[in-house]
Length: 291
Image (cartoon, rainbow, N blue to C red; front, side, top):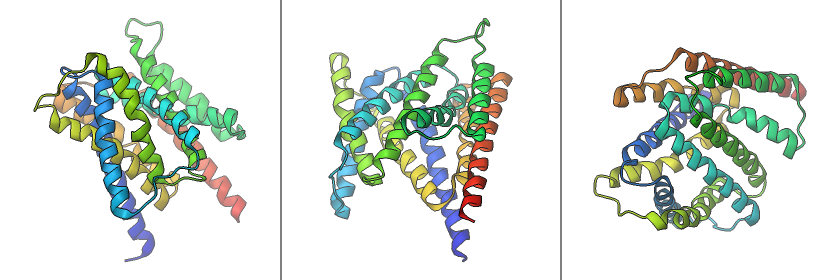
C-alpha cells in the first residue's frame, strides 16, 4: 500500500479515536453528575490518567523529566480551569451547543498567538476571528429570552483551552508528547483533590465504568489528535475533527432526547467555515513560501 494512503488511513483511525473520546467524556460526565461533583470527577480522572501514564513510561523506558517545569504548571492550571468550565457546560447545556462553542478555541488561539507569541494578524486570521465572533453571537443570541448565561462558561473553557494550546506549542519545543500528557495528570491531580476533598463522596459501583471512560478518554482524545497532526496537515485533520459536532449531537439526541436548534447549527457553520478558510489560506501561503 502507498505510504501516503497508509498514513491517511491512520489519520482516520486516530481521529475516530479522538471524536469518540470527546463524546465518551461528555456522556460519562452526564452519567456521574448525580453522584459526584465536577471537582471530584476531575480529580479521579487525573488519578486514572496518571496511573496509565506511569505504567506506559515505565514499560517503554521513556523519561519523566521536563525541561520546562514552570510552564508545565502554568499550562495545566489553565487547562484545569478549562476542564472545569467545560464539564459544567456539558451538565447544563445541550451537548451539540457545547461542542459548537468549543470550536472557538482556534479563534482565541489566534488572538493569543498574536499577543503572546508575536505572530502576525494576517487577512486569513482576521477572517477567522471575525467570522468566529459572528458565529458565537448567532449561537448565544445575547439580549433574547433564549440567552443562557452558561454559554459564557463554555466560552471561558474555550479561552482556557486556547491558552493551553499556546503553552503546549511552547512546551513541545523542548518536551515530548509523553511529558505533556504525564504532567497534565500530575499537576491537575492535587488541584482536583484540594477542591474535591471538602465534599468528597465515595463513588458507587455504578460510577466506576464511567470514571474509567472519563479518565482514559481524557488521554486518548489528546493522543489521537496529536498523532493525527503528526501524520497529516491540519487542513486534512481539522475537517475530520469537525465531525465531533454531528456525532455529539446524535449522542445527545439518542441518549438524552436533545434537539439541535437551527441557530446552533447556523452559528457552528459560520465558526467552522471561518476556521477552515483560515487554515486553508495559511497552508497555501506556507506551500508558496516553500516553493
